Length: 541
Image (cartoon, rainbow, N blue to C red; front, side, top):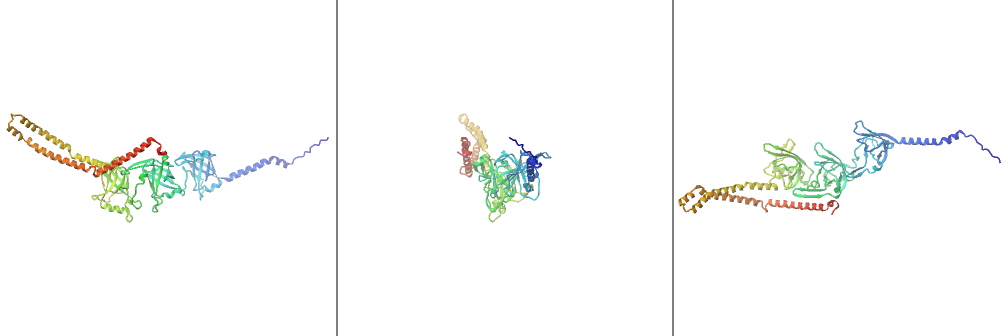
């Protein structure tokens, strides 16, 4: 059997190249295309300056715009001033038109605050940089990063609150309207001029219409117990604010009120203070006055209320107490503000009405109407003996209001008056005088008794004793002393009758004690309930 040898031919050069180098060549083409695609999509490298890195990592942390990754952090450096960091990020080319004067950057990280948990997605993906921008005109590659989330003014609206007391609010404290959260606190700062806390709050865009110039904000506390003008106010916060505090507000929806954007709102301590009844028909008309008091000024607070006919028409803003060497006493100089809108009518201006009232005589006097609290209010009352001269104080550039010292017609003042009148009766002096007369009469009477007992004494001796001046003065002294004592008793009876149970003072004292008794019962019931079941305020009965 014949075996055929295979015919081996030489391979062409073209076949050799095709079979050996075709795969690397294709890979090179693909690699080149990928490199071109990568660099063609790369945008510029931007520079963002932050106070600290906030957990950003080079090569891993990304930049997001509208929840889409549009860049990546390339490197992080310390700035030249050593007070912050500079983050460099390579951006995609398609986002380049948004790198302009409107662009804002901030770091998103996990946060637990009053509004809940934020940045929860960063627990798995890591901290990242968020971006806000609109199309602009000027190309910008260097930016200053924000410390907080950016919100466009057109979407939400910001308002300023002024607090004269240390309010227990922080960044992120929720803002409530009828129990629903409609905003939050963004920043807190101290005003160097007024020394008050300035609080900036953000109201979400869907609830902007709830705020206008009539809006009143107050701190929502857990329990609010207050003695106010002989009334006891007791309020318990709603369930959502029992766990975390907040700020609530109330608004009067009237076309006459403006949006309140440029207004600085006052932050009240409680709902009772914020909802205090306001009289009058016009918008606020504030004017400043100076009040000067002497004597018992220890009960004046720097925010004392100014009352007219039982309604609050103003309050003090400043208080200065100093010693008067000539009077040998303390004196208080107070700067207060009165809202004359309270005196307005449908036809007449409030300040005009007050001027007419001042012509007939008006005076400001201190009054302490509460037995338990050493806190005075300033009462405006008519007084024909007082004239309003409309003279301005140079220090405060405000009109000087005619004043009277602490009102003695209040409860404590009346008790002091009673004690003073009883002291003026000089009962001790009268009794001492009667005792002196009796002591002087003792010796003549004893002599007379000895004379009657002794049979050896003659009638002449009896006449001699009776004719003595000290014996003759007994009847006169006893008679005059009894008349003076009768007048004293009559005066005492009249004084006690004036303050009897049927008198105005008796009615006032009885009403105050009844109110104090009711307040004590309410407080005891609350304390008993908390003692029996401490969590009853949160979970109910």
